[in-house]
Amino acid sequence: MHTQVSNQPGTLFVVATPIGNLGDLSPRALKTLSEVSLIAAEDTRHSARLLKQHSVNVPTVSLHEHNERQAMDKVLSRLLGGEDVALISDAGTPLISDPGFNLLRACREADLPVSPVPGPSAVIAALSVAGLPTDRFTFAGFLPRQQGARRERLQQLAGVTETLVFYESCHRIADGLGDLAAVFGDERPAALCRELTKVYETVLRGSLATLCERVTQDLDQQRGEMVLVVGGAPAVAAETLPADVERLLQVLVAELPVKQAAALAAHWSGLKKNALYARAQAIRDAEC
Ligand code: SAM
Image (cartoon, rainbow, N blue to C red):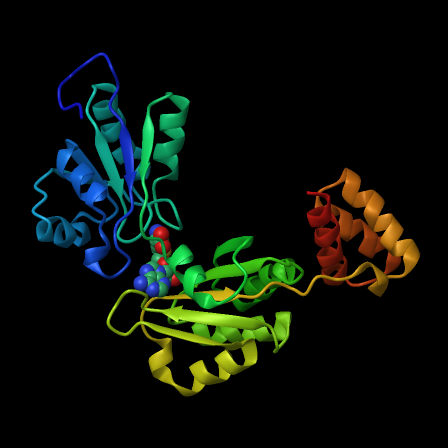
């Protein structure tokens, strides 16, 4: 790795770190963190614990949501000077609901080399144990805090036939599950994956209504960090729609994005957008 000024730019290594169990830092992540000349960390005090545990003595600079643009100038000048830099976040993979996008975009614009050092991410860890289909999934990140906006977002997602993954705060999990059950229906299968890789790791599997009841009754289930994995909407078969609507949807899906096709067909037919979205998605899936 480069540590001296050279004509060659350095590489930005995007390094995944543990989401709980410190033993999950990979040997390559440790080697990379030990060999770069600077580590850009979301919260330098938080990462100090991990770095100290592994005797990494490389200087750090903080790069978080509120200072990303200024901090990134520091990182870019190091990279342009030929030094390698690592980007880490507080936990898991940087940029996955974590800072770093502006830096990555700047590297892309400046044609600077970027290399991943992959490892833990809560979204993948949760999917791997939820027991719901994983061949395709939609990562929906955090839902809005306000109930009105949250329900509106859920309405948009109600017809998605792929498994959905949400990050959720312990303060909003009970309300979030209540809204999910109200919008997606009580019976949708789901898994609440809590404190993964940590001492109190728990995976609750059941319908949205069951999970909502369990979490509401047991306050321990509202503690810690959590990912909610929700089964997709059941695919709508062709014969469930009137023949003329099915034909229209086939034509629209051939020309337009699924969402727009479903919205136009709903407008024309007066049928519910969610059902049409699910059928439009099934038509698109069959095309691929
Ligand atoms: N970049 C991280 C990643 O790759 O997973 C995610 C950062 S995001 C700010 C933090 C959220 O990730 C938490 O609110 C929670 O939803 C989820 N999360 C992180 N660690 C977790 C864990 N050990 N168990 C369950 N969920 C976790």
